[in-house]
Structures are given as C-alpha cells and as structure tokens.
Image 1: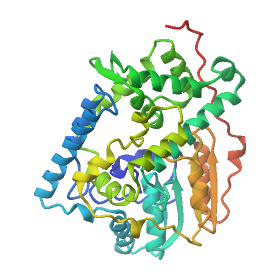
Image 2: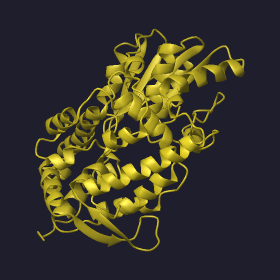
Image 3: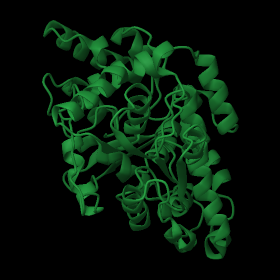
Image 4: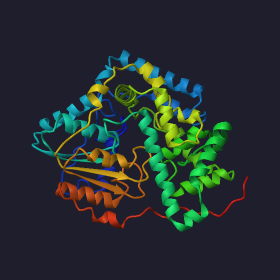
Length: 416
C-alpha cells in the first residue's frame, strides 16, 4: 500500500524488490483507486504545472495560494465534468478494494505492508476487514485517528529536532555547528522578511531555474528531506553565510516534476474529507507555534507539505468523513511498526503510538533514517523479512548497532 495519497504503487516496485521484500514470497502490488494506472486516474496536470511554476514564487504568499486554489478548481471541474464522483475516493473504499483483491485472488491469508499514507490505509483495512490478514507491517506511520493539519507540525518538529540532536551527539558536528536550531530560526525569519531570488541549475541538470527561497520554502525543504539529513547543518551554516546553493538547488528540483502522473485528485479527496475537518486555522497556528515558537506566523499558518489546504478543500468540496475514519485500530493481528528518527513528515513517535493498540506488535526505531524506512535501511529490510517469517517474534538485533551517519563538515566561512 503506497503513500501520498496519490502515489504510483507500480513505480514503487523496484524499491521493494531491491529491499528484498519478495526474496522468498510473492509480492502483490495494486494501484490504489484513482492513481496513475487505475481507471479513471485522478491525475491533475493543472496542479503539477502549478508546482513546477511555484518554485519561482514565495512559498506562503497569499498570491501563491490563490494560484494553487485555481489549479485545484480547474482539476476538480475537469474530473467532475468527466463523471468522476470525487467522494468515492476515500480510505474506506480504498481498503475495501484490497479486501476484494484478496478474495479475487483466492488467497486465504496474506501479509500487508504499507508506508506513509499506506499505513493509514493499512490500519483502516485491518480495522474494517481483518479476515484473511496474517500480519501487518507499517512503515512511517500515519495513525488514522490522529492525522490532521496541526499534526504535521508535530512531526516536522520531531524529525528536524532529531537531526539537530544527532549533530549535537557527534563531537565534530557539534563543534562546527553548535546551534543549528537557532540558525534555522534565524534563517526562516530572515528569508520570510526578505525572500531570496536565485537562479540555479536543477540537480538533474538542464537550464538554470529561477527559485525563490522564503521562510516557508526553507522549512518545507527540510520536511521533505530535499536536502539529505547529513548535509542539513552544513547547508544551514552556508545559508547563514550567504551561500544558499544547497537549498536553492533542492527547490529547483521541483521545476522538473513529471506532469500528469501523481494523483492529486486522490490526495485532495482523502485530505479534504478525512484530515482537514474539525480543526480551525487557529488550531493549526497554535500547533506551529508550539513546534517552532520563533517562526513567523506567516510560515506557521501553512501546514508542512499541505499549504493553503483549507482553501483548496473549499473548492474541492467533498463530504466530511472524519466520523468513520478518525477511529483507532485495535487488533491482535501480529504487527510491525517501522519508523526513522529523521522523518519530519510522519514523526518517529507515531509508530509506537499506533503500536499501543496493536496488542501483538513490535515497534522498531531506525536511527538516522527519514521517511519510508525499508528502502533506505538494510537493517529495516532484514527486520521486515524476519517479521514475515516470524510475525510474533521478529529478529530486531541489527538495530542495536545502528547510529546516524557522520554529518558533513565544511570549512568555516566568513559572514556575508
């Protein structure tokens, strides 16, 4: 069960195969309803083109938000004119599709693996269709009963804070970058007050691209792990001394995104029905202030990775489904939760949180890894393999020897 919501599960297959998920068993992958290889596909080239253009715009400016809302409305209008019933694209129906697939394949039992939004989906599936599930492994956990726009700030603070703590625990990193959290706050405030416009080539090559770095763009690049965690203290130090190249190139990568492949329609139908309702803009701002008390309100008013989402949801206009979806999954089915300490999208503590009501579960924390753990960590892949063989007693011994990689250390620079 892939992430997003709206990701292409078929495209994830090489990562799972490289991690050895199918080394001694069949791997069954299904494109979720509305995604690229399903009919209809709720892809939104209108939104893709907005995101490509938005690298040259202030991240959290109201004018940028209006362009996003316009793109979302154009996509919605097109899909509904084609007869798509957007309210049918939700986690309840998504889970039922997987239950139907098991029966269609005449499988008595199978193991379920999901990451990111796929964990929200897997937990919903386990709650609503427990029959036939031998075990459930969830990687980078999104508990359905807790996910919301304010929740994104908690995860951002946890993941970024873990990177800074790991730097403090490495003597060379701490000596070179004694207070990266303070540097981050200073740079978010500086860029929000005076956005920086830079022209840089995208990481994949090609013509230089104009990008705008403001405070919102900076924090979202960190949440997205667009700059590798081992480079973050160095990148912040360089930025503070007048060299924004690492962050600017990471932002420029968005200018070359594929158009018409990601199912933004599924994203919005799920988020607007299940994640957004019930919390006000005041709640979101309060969560941001708790997580990053030194950041400007203009940054904190937009949920990480979901900017202007309340405005988008007003035009997307799907019914509130929180009453049936914000429900805790309680189960005795063997379960495994995998979390990376550097995950700023789905904070590492949410794995253990979900495991509290999964009564035969094993919660595993992988140091120094960000979002979607298994493809990045051979140890996590081994734990998953062991779990599939022995769901109530997986071998987790490899975790004890893990530590974050050494951080990048750059020469000291003079202040610009």
